[in-house]
Image (tube, rainbow, N blue to C red; front, side, top):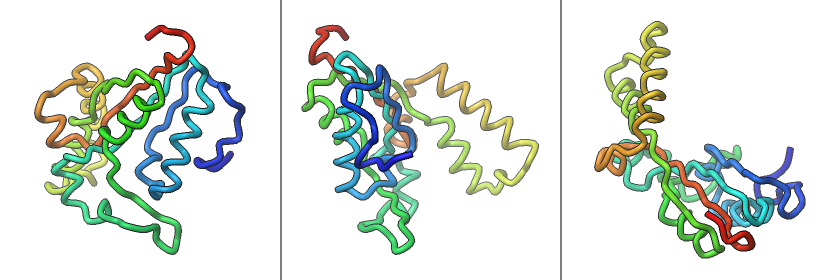
Length: 166
């Protein structure tokens, strides 16, 4: 256990560091420190894998909670951070950054299913969820559909500071 803005691990501890579904829930100042700690704890030739929300998503833009400007009294926060900012941050710190894919199909099921009121169907939901997962993994690039409708992107950042490898 630890705080995202003060990870309790030594420098260069991990070959791979995953950050999944966290960054959008950190207020901007905490998020910046957390990103610095991710870089700190990955080995010089290590990899970061980060899930970030999609600043261009038409689905997310319809959800008012993503417009939060400050943390609520109960500690809750969610905001749109986007891949451009994260990719730029890692690139500025000597990482080779790639967008690995999106969760377009999962987003489609979630948002359209909510609008059609089918998410409560206990038999249909697991089947749709499994199908969306398989489609997203097998087809990581969906062209303009990714940018317009995916809720999230998967970003990888490979440190090449000491190894010279990608």
